[in-house]
Image 1 (cartoon, rainbow, N blue to C red):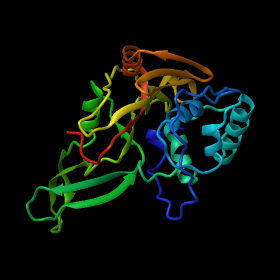
Image 2: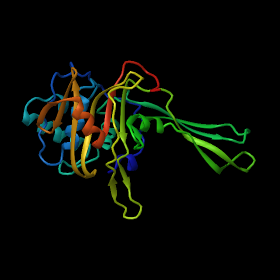
Image 3: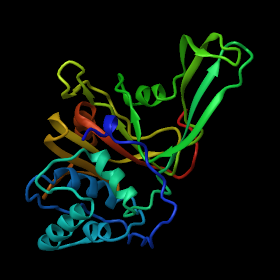
Image 4: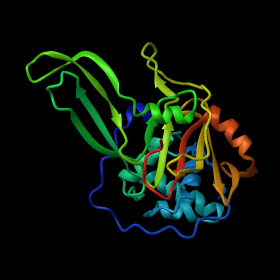
Length: 284
């Protein structure tokens, strides 16, 4: 279930359904009941509600139901549509990808252009590029969030691992570049990895201080934190920013908090980050 290891890049949908525009952004978070193991979905819904994205049913109803019973019914219907079990906890990036691949969420403002580059250093062979688009950037866990973001683009020199056109092994530079960033930037930190000895998913609780904004104009609007040691157990909560006020959303428990608390908890347990921006561009 670990999204950063097991789920593939987004397969682009060519025929989109009739998406509906989201109503006016909410002025307060919505309290979502948890009948079993749905904290992953509740946290994701809180983050999506404030992004004003276009959606289709049954996601639309889940985002905007008001009564407790309606929220329970709509969320169970949504999980069924994704072929997920309400008694099982899933990885948040995995669920987000399912929403897009099942045509319940319009990915247009989320898609991040990614260019995979292989640059032979023999001075003869033309560099190779592979272009794709992904809805989530899966970032390495570094000393702080900005270093994690910059590390995604690092070109690594690999010695004598590439055969050029003459069949001779040569050094290459290999890595990934981000030509631009979308209006809405979603990232996840690689806090989970597969232990090659035990074949179990392990969590890294390394502190990674977060920031409220990037030079690209993206402003942190919400983040999802994971408490526990594995994606299939533990607990998800979210922090959302509405009209310059931060709220902690823990299923049906909502409380206003200060940025100081968001920064402290997010730096230790932050997993998925949502940033809205007014313009395209790099983060440098």
